[in-house]
Length: 383
Image 1: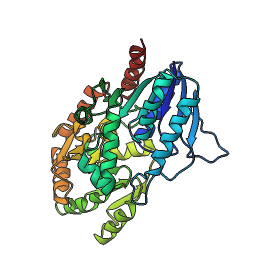
Image 2: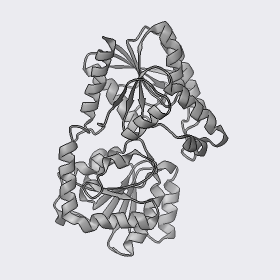
Image 3: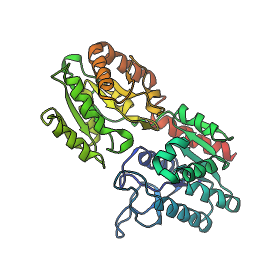
Image 4: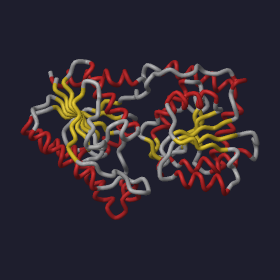
């Protein structure tokens, strides 16, 4: 089949879960013998050409800054990408399948306009479905516009993939009437240390992710300070980078924790897995997650996770409280500290149950399982 994968970012030029997902989709389809084109905004120098094995990469828009200084998505790039997507779909050869993310939404609307003329199967991934309240918080007075565009996209006829039960239900609530497939697997097996015996575990809590407002990396610092009042040996390692990084550093200095908390920045996968393997827990204080893959990465090395009970946090679907981690009541310092200490007190018992949880769920949560379902859906829907 001739398949067009559309997303305005391309890994590794930008880094995130969605970027990895679309690159994996494109490479998996190409490896299966499909003719694959990846359309995106250009994020590389003009004199370079991205190399994705077996995939034709086409820039349908110029290089643009995607984020504001505060870490919010800018409005212009999605509009430009939508226009470029429409032009490409109308002017290019005919595709059998067009597979894209719901966000940035203008590309979905572009596909809806082009499909009657070009007659392709449309597949849309809904990594998240935002509430009206969250749209208002994110865009202020323009929140109603963002929410209206999301509603419009939900009414476009397509096959929908969701990555959590939460967002699948929200998509239904927004008026979607088509077929929804929940893809639970985004974990990529890789070489990493096996689960470590309890005597090799260090008193370290690890955060790994982009330092953007939704992930609340700065919340780690006062939480560690609160936990250290009851566990003075506790250390912290805060991996990643982003617009909230200066606030993380400021809090470390203000609370006098420079000797207790390290901020290594982004780290290669092997290094991060080694850090997780020796940590007492992984802490993800996010208020909003569409999936939460780092929970599975932590469990793969036997390390429990601490996540936060928030209405927009789908990562809680990956944690069985008391089995492979703890769901904290909030991201307030004392609540996160209590959760970290619960993991410590559970000790070897929780580490063993975390490793067992991963073994039971590894196939269901594997990226390859999701990719197989994606490829199968193309065949079944085209027949």
